Length: 266
Image (tube, rainbow, N blue to C red):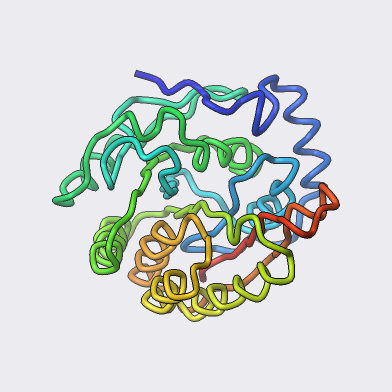
């Protein structure tokens, strides 16, 4: 079973050549020495809006063969911890194999489920694939996990479980999230700085609490808790903000923006 693209032709061009031209425009030239990050946080809007921020992160990090993709569940379909059960994902650049070995191991977590429905129309992980093709140094395989609402303890524990599985393995955790949604740019920045500060200090309990307390509409805060906790098990000591922007820089409308952050966890 292979997953077909759900948002090719909408969030990004469906044709390989057109997609490559857009990626060239957004990403520009390579940067210098690659960081060996444990995890990254990248946005997932249409590439024309958030692609520059995503590129700013991906071009800075070494991308190994094994990649764990953590994204929020926008559709409400499937289990709260939905692990893709098929063999590959189709993309304009070719098929991406699923890391079946790691999938079998993550499914040992009591609340994880092999579930296709959460992945069928979910865009948050799919839009990462063009960047992985562009910046991976060789072949790669992915483990896509879509996360619904989890209480803090379960999100933290899943992250620690994942981190233990990845010990001794060369892997990158990709946390997919946009930041504040549909508010003025200045308000978005003010609110997002609260959560970015928590992520820089790897304080996942603070991230979770303040996201709820201040009603900050960061959609991927559950994946962020999971991914940061896993990165801590793997030795991460800090989060570093690489880029922060918003949709107004493309549309010209700063009264109602979606904001995007790019971070690395080292």
